Image: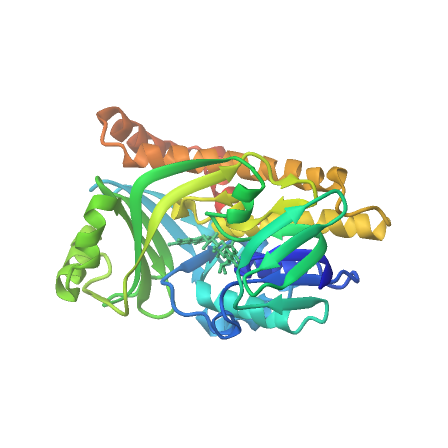
Length: 390
Ligand SMILES: Cc1cc2nc3c(=O)[nH]c(=O)nc-3n(C[C@H](O)[C@H](O)[C@H](O)COP(=O)(O)OP(=O)(O)OC[C@H]3O[C@@H](n4cnc5c(N)ncnc54)[C@H](O)[C@@H]3O)c2cc1C
């Protein structure tokens, strides 16, 4: 099998990137070890993805946004950041922007299903499912991917979209900086007595953080980050104890709260590859940068990177240049590194500050919230990063 581009990983980023490359006569293959049934109808994973305005625009251009049930898209109109037990909050409001919402909250499984549907309908893309990549080899002329079913695929360019622990990245010898926070994220959906008024909360309590994100109706997505040695206790809590715990951590702002469904846990580490390409090879999505979820940037950055890479490839194709050349791929690397590095280090710094139990850190974060609220250029800068309103 011969292709122009082979993408390893049909996660939300791999699929979006495949879609971005259509319409320019490239022959694309996308490989995933999951079955076509599980890609078409992904199971619940507890992740509610906060999407920026730029991501909405990119997904709309790809025709993916239109495939998401619009009744399942919740609006985040305000966001409040709370420090410890203090009632004071750093407050962001959509009324300070030109838009009717700061962002959108969408179940991850719906984004994945919509992306798969669009890709499946594209004549330029062959989806190869239920097989993993056993090994691959890249030389000056082509890439050769050996699949777990013994088939071999050749292409001119290989893209790794195989997630945060990317085996392809490791195989290519691309170093990645990894920051293990020693924490676990626990997510679930809760029903509550009072309406959330489309306000998202990020509460930096001592010892754990709690995010409460507005879903459709009187439901919220609950995101707890906690030291990994304490995570099992929360995962194993019976519903009554868990409801009580979250309600009291949240100061009963939403009245009584009841868990609706299962809890899901994810180990918390961030990663950033030193560079995003080598010969005939590039990294996208979490394989390039895996973000801490607190600033909700992972998929947003993955989409931005996909668009950047697809744009340089399309320009090369339209200029009849070699789209696999070092010059083209390094344009992607430079542009995307400039986007990701400040966000990656900024987010990790914020997480360290808000997780620290040191008195100096507690004082700094109290001041930081007040400074953020009262110094408009800072607030505007943060809001710009979080919403990507253009
Ligand atoms: C709790 C939580 C909350 C989050 N909230 C947000 C948010 O609010 N906003 C946001 O922007 N982001 C958020 N994220 C991040 C977001 O979920 C990720 O950035 C996104 O899923 C990355 O997509 P991806 O396609 O790069 O990788 P993945 O989703 O990891 O997909 C990788 C794919 O590659 C396949 N694969 C791997 N290895 C192989 C192989 N060898 N052969 C074949 N196939 C392979 C896998 O089966 C998988 O389908 C959150 C993450 C978590 C954990």
